[in-house]
Length: 274
Ligand code: PAF
Image 1 (cartoon, rainbow, N blue to C red):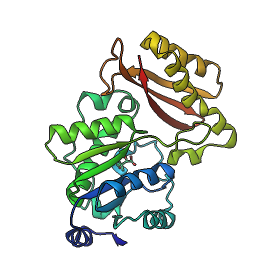
Image 2: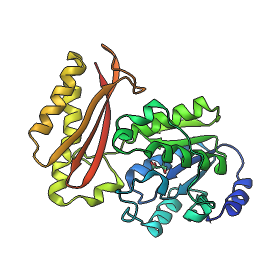
Image 3: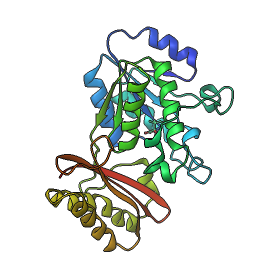
C-alpha cells in the first residue's frame, strides 16, 4: 500500500493503477461502516484509493473540527488489511495551498434544507472537497455511505449536473446489533447517551411499521418514540421521496432524522414504503 501525502505522490501512484479504479473518500476514524465501503469498492474495482482528510471547509465555527477523532495509524492498518492500493492523506496546506478556496461548489436548494439548514455552508464544503478529490484521484467509481443520505444525494446531483463521469455507489448503513448506526461521532457518547441514541433507529423502525398508512402516520410514529425518550431532542424528522423530493402518496420513500443527544448531533435514515 502506498501512502501519498502530496499531489505529486498521488499522481505518481495513480499512474501505476490500470483497469477500474474506485475511490473511497473518508475523514478517517474508520469503523465497520467504512470497512463495508472499502469491501464494496474492492469487489467493484481493480484498484482502490482511500482518501483520508478531515476537511475544515465542512465544519462550522462551533463544530468539532479540533476534537474530531483522529486515529490515523489504526486507519492505515485497516486500509491495508482491506486491500487498499493507495491512501491519499494530505495535510490541510496541501489540499488548500492558497488558503480556504474562494470558488466553491453551490449545492443548490437541496443544500439548504435538513443538514444544510442547521449547518450553513456544510454542503458547499463537502461538495468542494469531493470534487477536488475526484479530480485528484480520477476514479471510475466513488463509494459513499447511505448513512449520510443527503450527502450521497448531493454528490450524485453534482456528478450528474456537472458531467463528472464517475459512478457514484451508495453503500447501506452498518448498524450495531441493537440498531445504532455506526458513526465516528458515536465515540462522543457516554454509555447512558448511547442508550438514548437508540431513539433514532427505533423511530425509523416504528415509522416503517406504519408506512402503509402514509407519510403523516410514519412521522407521528417516529415523533412518539422521541416523546418517550428524555435526553434526545429531535431536530427534524421528515419523509421524502428517495431523491429527497416531496413524499409520494405511496411507494418508495425515505425517512431522515436528526437529533441531539447531549452535545452530540446524530443523523440516521432508512428506506420506507408508503
Ligand atoms: O462523509 C465524509 O466522511 C465526508 O463528508 C467526505 C465525503 C469524506 C468529505 O469530506
